[in-house]
Length: 466
Ligand SMILES: Nc1nc2c(c(=O)[nH]1)N[C@H]1C(S)=C(S)[C@@H](COP(=O)(O)O)O[C@H]1N2
Ligand SMILES: [Mo]
Image 1: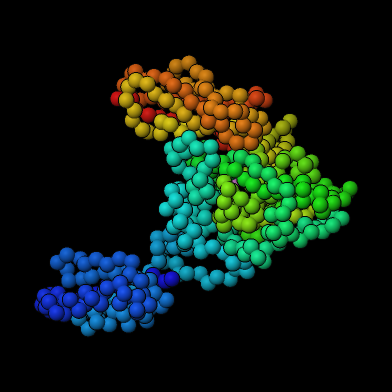
Image 2: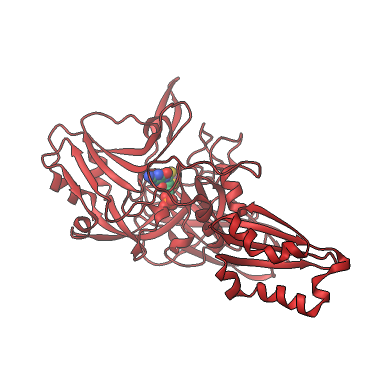
């Protein structure tokens, strides 16, 4: 519903409030039931002290309803009505001077303003309102195995499509014996599995790449863990009957838009080789932490490729296509790779498994702690293998082994903690370094690359001891 700001001002000499009858009449006019009768919803009202001016924020289907409703105030002085928007709306359109864009999308989408406002209220750190991108605040990560759905990071390239469960179908076609068109009900009737999986954006940590690279300037919070429930990808592929000449599987989302260097809109689509699809334990997920998949996270169905950078986990899945050649598409071949110089020539390495990494969640960066016992806590994960250990170092002290909490995890982060002491007042730098069971270790400094991907370098936390 459109928002309006209303301003009424009157002559100090003729203040209606000075006349008890007139004043009470105007006051009664603002009573909730009366406001509602006029088709208006009052969000807020305030009088500027000593200024004989009242401001209101109201919602109404159009400006004329507001003008009709405010008629008694117009008689008592002046009246101004301004079409308004929330700050989220302004940011999502690209500035205060920019008008609402006419919607010409073919796929219905979530209102960017509402989606953004909701994300902020839920505690995400929003980087961009349109498309909506927000990360978690790391100190909020207190102990839970999974992240509540509302606080899971959100990474979108385009508008969030609003698909209807009734009309939605998953098409499985290409090099298959039995092309399929599955409804939500068909999917729900297939064998299901639940897996706790950590998703991490390949750009997580990009903001500390030097020199700076383009792309969302994520701090450390483009990572979250959830329990995903869905159908194993292989169940669907087996039902479709993959033909012998098949080599790659393409996953296509319902979201699309314009990207740099391409005249026509493109869809968000990614592929896995047949072997990757077979051995990755990928799920087609319809539930997240026991609830229906939220719109922002891919309703009604998304891919979850455990241990891979999350770009592989296509949301709003509508199509699976089986092809006999490597897939060429913007998000497959023009992004999400790292160029490496090997023997004098450039080798392009597509991103797959998440690199080993740890986060210190406690104490919070730049917090102040008392002398004495100190608990250092955090999470660690690696796409290639379970975490072998996490070592922690205070200032120039020795690296000390943290305790891993709970069982070893294969596809999700592992909590760790170290009980230690800080006895010297002053600044203290805490470092944590994770190692996985295949011997991968977090580097001291980031490996710079053009798009700023996979920055898994140590991230010291600075605190003050008093
Ligand atoms: N259809 C679609 N799938 C997508 C994306 C997207 O923009 N569209 N973003 C990808 C990227 S880069 C990431 S990091 C994850 C983010 O998933 P989340 O928003 O549920 O955290 O979704 C992936 N899947
Ligand atoms: Mo991502």
